[in-house]
Every structure is written in C-alpha cells, then in structure tokens.
Length: 68
Image 1 (cartoon, one colour):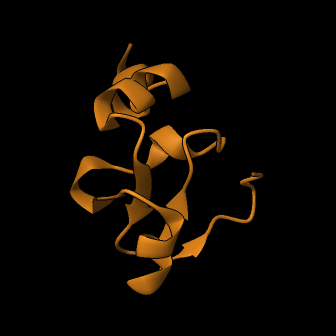
Image 2 (spheres, helix red, strand yellow; image 1 turned 135 degrees about the vertical axis):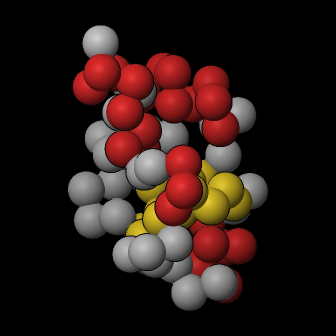
C-alpha cells in the first residue's frame, strides 16, 4: 500500500538502515531504532549515525518521544 511504502513499519525501517540512528537533516532531530517515528524520516532527509554521541556532536537532538 502507498502509505506503507512512504512510511515503512519499524521492522522494515530498521532493516533498511541496518539499525543505525536516523537523523532528520531538516529538523536536526534523531531517532533511535525503538522510537515510534523511526521509519517516518524520508530518504532525502535521512542521515545515519553510529551513536547518539555522534549525532549530538553534529548538532542533532533526540526526539522527545524516544525512550531509552
């Protein structure tokens, strides 16, 4: 379905990114694999990070709906 293509479910999104942290270069917010909006970052805005420290070092902040 189109909405699944645009916004893959959490399992598909983790598979696509290899489980890395996903940042949104427009909002400068990053999402962990267990975050509800992890799969909603579009490909054109997606930046991948290996660690939270790396994301924060580049000016990104953790999404407020992410728990650790």
